[in-house]
Image (cartoon, rainbow over all chains, first blue to last red; front, side):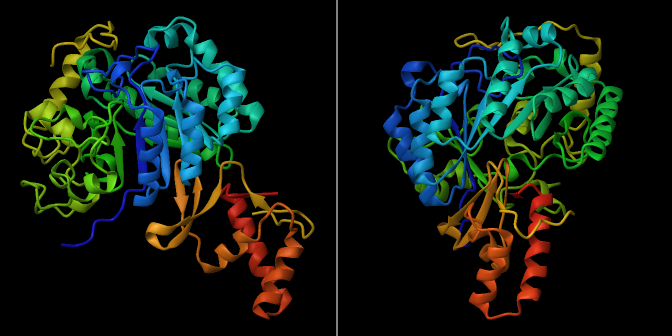
Amino acid sequence: MTPIDPPLGLLAELTHRCPLRCPYCSNPLELSRAAAELDTETWARVFREAAALGVLQLHLSGGEPTVRRDLPDLVRHAEQAGLYTNLITSGVMTDAARFDALMQAGLDHVQLSVQDAEEASADRIGGYAGGHARKLAFAALARAAGLPLTLNAVVHRQNLDRLPALIDLALDLGAQRLEVAHVQYYGWALANRDALLPSLAQLQAATATVEAARARLRGRLVIDYVVPDYHAKRPKACMGGWGRMVLAVSPAGRILPCHAAESLPGLTFPNVRDTSLREAWERAEAFTRFRGTAWMPEPCRSCDRREQDWGGCRCQAFALTGDAAATDPACALSPHHALLDLAVAEAAEAGEAFTYREIGRAPARA
Amino acid sequence: MSAIPADAIPRLARGVKLREDAARGRWVVLAPERMFVPDEIALEVLRLLDGARSLDAVVEELAARFAAPREEIAADVAELLADLAARGIVTT
């Protein structure tokens, strides 16, 4: 057997608690409650295990990671373990004193989400009144402290027309990077797909906007662009390939190949409470199941792109076809590809109402 | 690419870190949402950026260490640092 390369990144989902209620939240439908969360010492051990395994970058995420009162301690433990620390936050719970505590702990970078460039729409999408204004205040703290800032804008039908304003916002806030991420439709986002899917015309306009802005802002702002599957001809290399680049740990300690993997049936996920990250990465069936290319069905198995896109996304394959081992329907070679066109057509006729993300209120599965 | 003055003090930009990647037997430069693996020469230069040495001092040190002509080293280091500055890795 060829040796397995160690992971480069760890996504630590510290909590599922979050004051925002974004209808495209990437957390699973079944959200963990506070009592199930790992404690400080366990996370510190996980960070040390990650560094020893070969992880270089740590993404502190959630839910909203700043609801954890011990977040500065967690940043300090990560820093001492030698990890590069990236905080992924909504920014709405961090005042100047708490921000300063994070800086003292050695935080390296922050990724701040915004729901829209326009306040009323942003607060409606996030389901949290006053949230947008707090985010702007957070960005000002980051700028004043000289902390590298990435602005993350999840885009969809109801905010995509304001993409030029989102780019201006990133510049105004002093961000060095902007992530324009089209919604990925699993979990909560799948339940809200009809209200979120953009039209092809909207998507093409957005792509043109990004390309023009990249050229105009070279050297000032880096724009990362995550394209949507529903208008694609080939799937994305989800997670850079299953069990190849990154791993995730859920609030309750489950060790996952991706943050949405708990939606897949028939996989047992090891827990950091009784399994080391190395053991999970190298041996757990949950990681070996879709690693590499041997598991692939046709048309992936003989495709010359099989080591570029790694068959696409397992969660999307399961959500749309009922088979986690199927070719991602985002691929035009998938026998299920027409499902995506159908969804786009349905969404074009649908309304704008959201099912908001809330703990203990999972919608019926689509 | 604009040249860095000889008396400027180049250093890693905010949010950029040079780290040993022991699991893979190499050194890496870590930055927000990205990383790169410096070649041997870039690594030697990056290690000398301690926030105190000027570009001149970096060149001096390398010329002594490798017993190489100063002008040659100066040109190579200037080019390398200008490239790293353009990529947001190094600042002055």
